[in-house]
Length: 359
Image (cartoon, rainbow, N blue to C red):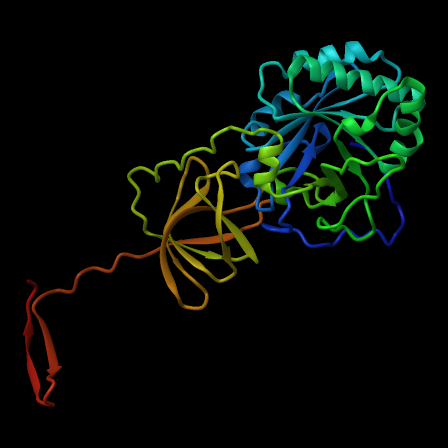
């Protein structure tokens, strides 16, 4: 998406990002401008994603390469960039044709000023697009816009056309100088329904979320937790079952965490549930799965010295190539040659000297 809210030099690009940044559901939106999407390499908090499908009557140029990884996400949305120079219905029909083979949980009409001539009539086209798509899919359909665009165009269209935008859930884009996923966007004029999604920055570190752009990744939150988001969008997909451990493995590797935090997953990818965290200095015993590049382990030795038995998966490198886990092979220690000469101190203080044999 291309909305620009701030260009002031005080607009921060350094802000907290990582495995857990908020208790809200947290995700990204992505398109051809992100070049690729590799959710299995994401180390940031990636609970959902929204993929651009089309604009005008044109399929997003990277749609086919992005849709397969998009389907790996446990909560998935799809959006169309509405254009004022093309009638809304051909745009809607093309969007529906493209998404028909795929399973998205919610859909979005992107209504913004870039590449468009803004008007109240154009706002009504967005309304018609949403009603048409919702009627034909039965899926929730949101409007994406800024609070200011809502005030200037969507709100006035209510009186002219006798419609009510408060019946449509909103995804607002508003980027404050210091991004805060626990904050909230400005409530626009005439809006009484609470926002559902908020794009709180366009300055995310893309590789943390499996895309290419280092400081131009759109980050979003749902107005609630992951379970609440699943309930709201009626997500009934069963999370993937944990895979079998690597076959024929020796479990003779040790990995040391080099970064601040690494997610523990039930399987080798971000589509699997997050079941814990590893922290810098923690060590895990297991082996690298050659097929996925993820590390499967059965034992953790924490940096504090405490050890625990736990099975899980963690990433070795992030999508930017940063090494998150330093993996080494544990050398075999051969049995000593028997008999072994030994001196043993007994409980009464006496000593015994002789040869020990292997039993």
